[in-house]
Image (tube, helix red, strand yellow):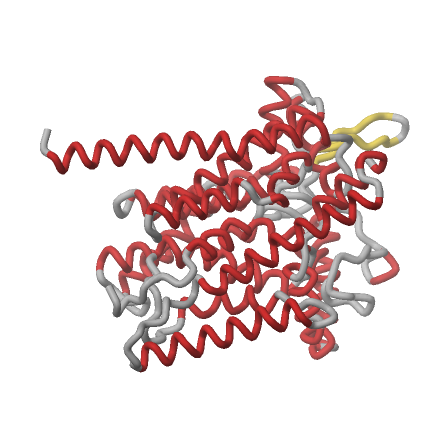
Length: 470
C-alpha cells in the first residue's frame, strides 16, 4: 500500500471513529431527557401520537366517528403522515409507551448531529465540520426536543440527508437519491419539496454550468419530478378515501387563513367557524374553504398581511422557548416557574448566539492588503455586527434580520466572498424557503428548529478564507 493510500485509510478510520463518538455524545443527553422528562403528549404532539397509535394498530391514518350509535372508520390527513408513520414503526416493535417515542426522538437527534457533520465535510475543513456536528449534538433546545412528540428533528434529518446524498454521490445518482429523500421528507414537512429545484446546484457545479444553462434547468425539473414519487402514492390514497384530493395534508389553507384573517397577530390563533367557514363537511373541503378565505383576506387587505411579516418572522426566529413550554404543559410539577424561566433563557441565548455566529459564516476573514474584496467583506462585517448589536441591545430583541442576512448574502456575487459550494448552498436554500414559508403563513419559534443545523453549519463556517485568497 502506498503512503497516500495509507493516509486515506487512516483518515477514513478517524472519520468513522469521530462519527461514532459524535453519535454517542449526542445520544446520551437525549436519552436522559427522554427517560426523565417524557410525558403525555400535548398540543400537536397529541395528534402525532394518536395517528401513530392508529397506524401501529393497523387502523390506518384515521379516527373513529360515532354515527347512529355505531363506530365508523374515518380517514384523515390534517397533519402530514410522515412523523406518525415513523413513530408507528417503534410502537409496533416496542409498544406505544411515551418513553418509546422519546427514545425514537433521541435516536433521530443523534443521527441529525452526524448527518450535519457529514454534510459539512463537503463544504468546510475537517475541523470546522466537526464543530458543526458538535453544535448540533450539544444544542440545548435540540436535546430537550427528544422528550417532545414533534416532527421538526425528523424533518431536518431527512432534508439534510437528502442534501448529503446529492453532494456525496456521483451525478446523476446523487440528484435522484437526494430528490427521493426530499420526497420522503415532504411526508413529514411538505415544505421540503421547495428545496427540490436547488438540487440542480450540484449538477451545475459538476458540469461547470451556470444557473441559466439548460443543464441546470433540466436537472431542476428532474429533481422536482422525482421528489414527487414518494408523495404521489399518499396523494392517491387521499383522493380515494378523503372528500377530495390533498397532496400531503389539509392544513395549508388553515395556516394561510391564520396568517391573514382580521384577528391575525403573526403567530398561531385559533380559527372559528364564525370566521368564515361554517358550512363544511369534510377535511379537504374545509381546507379549501380556508384557503379561499385567506386569499380573499389578502386581496382585500394586502398591506395588513404584509405588515404582519416582521411579526411572523420575529415569532419564528427571535427566541426559543417552545420545548420548555411543551414540557411544562405536559408535566407542570417538573417545571416550576424558576426552572421554566431558566430553561427558556438558556435555549434562547444559545439560539441567538448561534444566529450571530451564522452571520459570520457569510463573511471571509479580512485580508491584510487593501483591495475591493477587502472593502466588500469589511462592509459585510460592519452590517453583520450592526445587526447583531442591534438585536442584543434593543428593548425588544429582533433577531430575524440576522436569519435573513444569512439566507441571502452567500448567494450574492460579492468580491472576496468565502466559498459557497453546493453543500453549503443547499442548507441555505432550506433556511430561505423557511423564511418565505413563515412570512406567508405565520410564525412560532418551533419552526426554526428545522434550520437549527443549518445555523450550526454556518456558525462553524465563520470567517473562512476568501475564494480569492485560495
